[in-house]
Image (cartoon, rainbow over all chains, first blue to last red; front, top):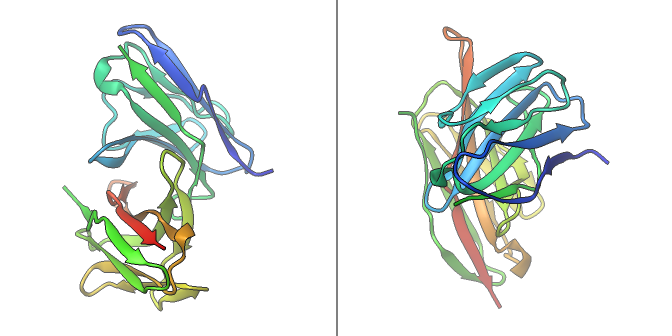
Length: 112
Length: 114
C-alpha cells in the first residue's frame, strides 16, 4: 500500500530534550516536506526537500532541523524543544514540487 | 508576504444544498492549485487539483480565475459526509531563486446538517 508513515504518533516531552520524528514514504517520491498545524494559523511549512541531500527552509524553520540522506526518509529533529513547538506535525511527499501531496497521519507533540 | 486567504466559516448548510468556497491568492507567479479536505485531527487528503479550464469530479467542481487570482470549489447536493474543513493550496515557483513556495489557506469549515 502506498503510504507516508510517521513515528511516533503521540509524544509528550520536556523542554530541552532532543527528539526526532521519523517520516518515511514508499512511493519513490522526489519531494518531501514537514508542516506544523496550529489552531487559527493553519498548516505552515517547516522544511522541504526536493531530492536526496537537498533541503530548504519553509516558512517556520526556526528550532527545527531535517536531513535527507535517503529518498524515502525525511526525519524532523528538534534539538532543544520548547513549549511553543507544541503542535500537530505532518509529513508529506509528492512526485515533484508541483504535484499533489500525500500526508502522513500526523504526530501530536506536547512540550512541557 | 505572499498570502492565501479563505473564509474560515463555518458554513452550516442543509443536506442537498449547493455550497461554494473561494480562495484568493496574492502571488501572480502561482502555478499549481489544489483543494484538500481535512477531517478533525486527521491528515489532509487531496480532493482535487484545479486546472485552468476548470474541472469536475462528481458533485465537486473546481475553477481557477487567474485574472482575479482566486480558485473556487463548488459542492452540489451536499451530503452529511461532506462535513469537514476544506483547504486550498497554492504553489509558486521562483526561477531566479531556484526555489518554490507552497502555501495552504487556513481552511473553511463546512457542516452539513440533516
